[in-house]
Amino acid sequence: MKLTRTMIAAFGATALAAPAFAGSADPAPMEPMIQAPAPVAMSMGRDWTGGYAGLQLGYADVDAGTVSGTGTALDGTALTGDDVIGGLTLGYDWQFGNFVAGVGADADIADLEIGGGAATLERVYRLKARAGYSFGDGLLYATGGGAGADIDGFGYNTGYFVGAGYEHMVTNNISLGGEVLYHEFDDIGEIGGNSIDAEATTFQIRANYRF
Image 1 (cartoon, rainbow, N blue to C red):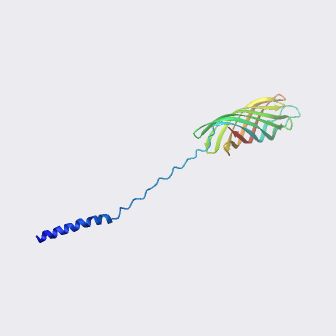
Image 2: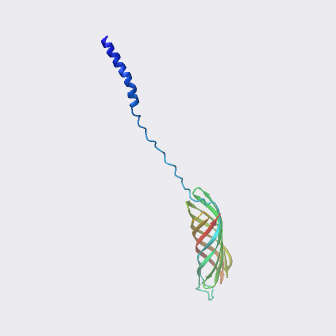
Image 3: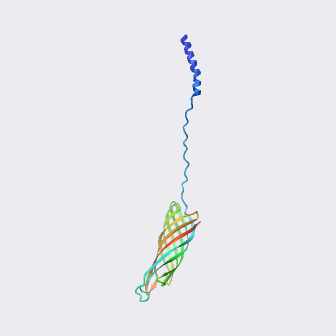
């Protein structure tokens, strides 16, 4: 009987103590919340699709060989010359990913004497195609097409050109660049019965307004 009372007393004390222990227990520590970083906006660079018009200015070097076998005072004359050239340019580009393709036209004026005045290059016209790779604000490209030249002393002549250039967008609407072109004109005229061919190299800087 004494043992029973002792067990009851012990059980009662345990039951009374249990809520106290339960209430005094510290809550389990909370794991810190890990926040995912905000996504960073990726810049895809400029979109080259659209039209443009602008100005270009540079240098032209013409070589039509040396006159020989004509029996005239021109024998031995080097039909060469170099001078400033410049004019207008316009075109349209399409962009496909990083690839850019376009078409355009140039019209340049010059007063470039060839062979010490034997002839004078006055105007150059070009119908051109270009294709290149865009990396952000820059465009590196190759170009080529048909060319025409007004040469005082030989008349109007047609030929072709090939070249390369680089263009860089400095604002949303303005681009600056440079272009080197090699031109070839066959049979631009005759001197003393000899057919004259000419080649020309131009380097020009360009400023375009893009719209």
